[in-house]
Length: 561
Image (cartoon, rainbow, N blue to C red; front, side, top):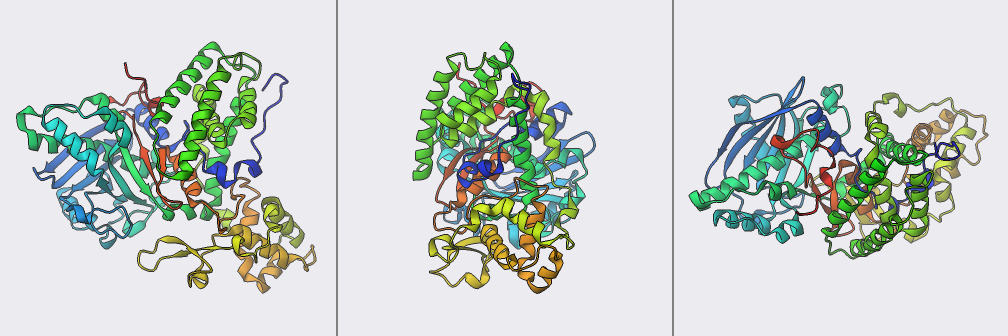
C-alpha cells in the first residue's frame, strides 16, 4: 500500500507490450538463471567432475555432475580441435569447438560412447529420452588465445580484454524439450528444480561455464607446463558464457502467448507490489543504492557496434546520470518512494532507463516477490481449446480488447505488411523475408497476429452477435487461430505484442531481448536487426563457491578493491 492505502495496479498491457519497451527489458531477480542459482545454494546441491579425459590438443570429453535433493544431472562435454575455417556461429555450421548434452542422471561408459557418436554431430545425430538438452559452443578466438598464452607464461590475463569480451566461449544453440530425440519437457516438468521455465537449459549453461574455465586452464598447462599460472578466481568469476541468438527465438513469444504472459505478468505484479509499499527502511534504501551503483559499473562495460544499441547506450548513460542526481535528494525517504521513483522515471528517462529502474526496485524485496517465480510456467493445457459456444459479439469484444490499435491500420499498404515469416527448407529455422521482393508469401507462418486479428474482425462484422462462434469458424476456419488467441487473452492480458510484427520497420531483436532478459542475460550486443550476442552467468559463483551469500546478486559486479 502507498501513503493513501491504495494498491498500485500492474501497468497497462498497452504500455508494457510495445516492442520498443520489450526490447528495453533488463534481467531482474525473477530471471531464470538467478532462480536456479538461489535454488542450488538453498538446497545445497553438490557438484563433481568424475571424468576429464582431454588431451594436450584439447580433444576429448568430460562429465560434470550436479546432485540435487532428488535427482542428479550430468553435463557430458566433448571438446574438439576445430580448424579456424570451420568456426561459424551460423545455424548452418557443421562443426564446433565444443558440444554438450545434459544427461538425466549419471552416464555409464556405454552412455558416453553412444553420446560421443551423436552429440558432436548435433542435428545430424540423435540423442535419447535420457538426454535433456543438446548444445554447442565456439571459442572467442582472440580472448581464448590471450588467456591461454598469458597463463602459460605465468601471468594473469589483461582485465581490459576480459571486460571487453566477457566470455571464452559462446553457445550457438541450447536445444531442449524433445529436439533431436531428447526428452520432452513433460518428463521433468513435475520436478521442483526444473518446473520453472528453462531451468534445464540454464543448468546446462551453468555447467558449460565450469567446463570452459577448466578447459582453458588445461590448455594453458599443456602449453606452459610447470610455469603455468592458475587463473585468478576473481578474473574467472567475471567470465560468463556468450550466446549468439538469431531469429529462431523471435517467434517463440508469439507462439506461446500464455507462457510469455506469465513471465510479463509476474514481473509486473512484482513491480506493482514494490510500488505499493508505503515507505522504505534505511536498510532497503542502502541495498537499492548499492545495487544501483553496481549496475552502473556493469553498464559501463557494455559495448556494441550496432547503431540502434549505440543510441540506446547513450540514452542509458544519460539516464544513469539523471537517476544518480535524483537519488541524491529525498526521493527514497518520502512516502511511497518506489511509486514516486517509477512515476518520475516515466517522465524523465528513456524506456531503457525506465525498465532498468523497474528491475532494480525489486532487489531489496526478495521475500515479497521471489515466490511469484512459481507462477511463471504454463500448466494450462486446456487454454488452447476453443470455446465454440461463445457468442460472436463476445469474440469481437475480445479481439477489440487486444488489437484495437491494429484495426485502424491499412493492411494493404506495403509498409504495414512488408515482411513475412517463413521456415527455411535447409535448417527448418524461422526466417524473416521481404514479402514484395522474395517469393515467400505462400510459405508464410502465422506470426502476424495483429494483421490476422484485423482480418477476423472484419469478417465478423456481418455476423449477428448472438450466433455461436463455432458457426463462424465452420465457414471461416482460417480464423481459428485468431479466435483461439482472443479467447486466451481472457487469462493472458500480457500475451500479445501490441505492435506490427511484419511491418517494414519491425526490429526482431526487440523480441530476442525480451526473451533473453528473462533468462537473465546481460550486455546485449545486436549484430543486425535479426541476431544478438549476449553474456550469461558473468559474475556468478562457480560450483565450489556457490552459497546462499553468493547465489543471488552476482549479476551486479563489485567495484575492484
